[in-house]
Image (cartoon, rainbow, N blue to C red; front, top):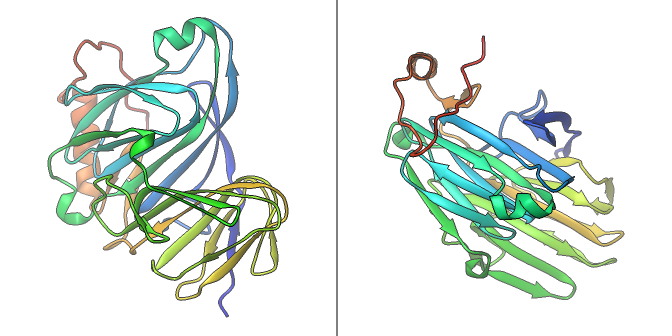
Amino acid sequence: MTTVTVIRPRAEDVEGQPILRPLPSRECRSVGPFVFFDHMLETRYAPGSGMNIRQHPHIGLSTLTYLFEGELLHKDSLGSDQVVKAGDVSWMTAGSAIAHVERTPDALKAKGFNLHGLQVWLASPKAHEQGPGHYSHHPAASLPVSDNLGVSIRLIAGNGFCLESAVPVLSPTLYAEVQMQTATTLLIPDEHAERAVYVLQGDAQLDGEPLEAHSLAVLPAGQSMALFAETECHLVIFGGAPLDGPRRINWNFVASDSALIEQARQRWAAGDWPTVPGETGRIELPVK
C-alpha cells in the first residue's frame, strides 16, 4: 500500500485577506489539473471595508472561485461583469491573455459581511494554453447534489460520485464539496488517477489514520479509500487526470514553456495586454 501524503498549508495574505495555501508545495506540485489551491479563511469585514484585487493578468490556466460565505464581483477583459454569491461557481479560462478584477460588491461592503471560500487554479492542457479566453457563471442551484446516509456531496466541477457538473473543464476533473455528519463514512473511489482531500472543518480518519482540519491529504493512485467523520466534517475532494507534462508557475502565469511566461511578463510590464472595461488600477509586475 502506498502512503498518503499529508500537507500542512502555509499561511499567506492576499490584499489583506488571510489564506492557507497547500498547493503548490514542496511535497506536491499538482493534483490532476489543480496547480494552485487557496483557502480564503473566514474573515469578518467591517462596514466600509472589503476585498479589492485590482486588474492582474493570467495565462495558461482556469481560475475557479467558490464561496461558502459572502460575495465577490468578477470583472474581466472579455467584458464579464458578474456578482458571485455563496455556492456559485465562477469559472474563467485565461488562454493566451486575460485580465480580471475581484472585489466586494458595493452593497455588501456598505453593511459589513463575512467572507469564506476557495479559489483554485487548474492548468490548461497544452492544446488550450494559447487558446481564447472564456468566462462562465454557474448559479448554486445548477450544481448537482447527492444526499445519502448523512453524507452530502455537491459536484462543483468535473465528474465523480455518479454526478457531473456543467462547468466547462478542459480535462478530466473532480472537484466536490462534501458535508459529513458525525460517524458517517464515504468511500472515495479510484475513478480519477489523482485525488486529494482538504479538510475545511472537523476531524476525520482516512483508512483509519487521523486527518485534521486544514490539512491536505494526497491519495495514492489506484486505491479506493474510506473517509470516516469523527465529528461533523466539511471538506473538498479534488483531482483528475495527470497533467500532460510539467508546468511552470511565475506570479499569475502558468505555462508548459518558460518562454511563454517571459513573453507574458514583458507584455504586462509594457501595458500590451487586454484591459478590463472601466478599470484603470492594476497590479504591477513584481520583481523576479
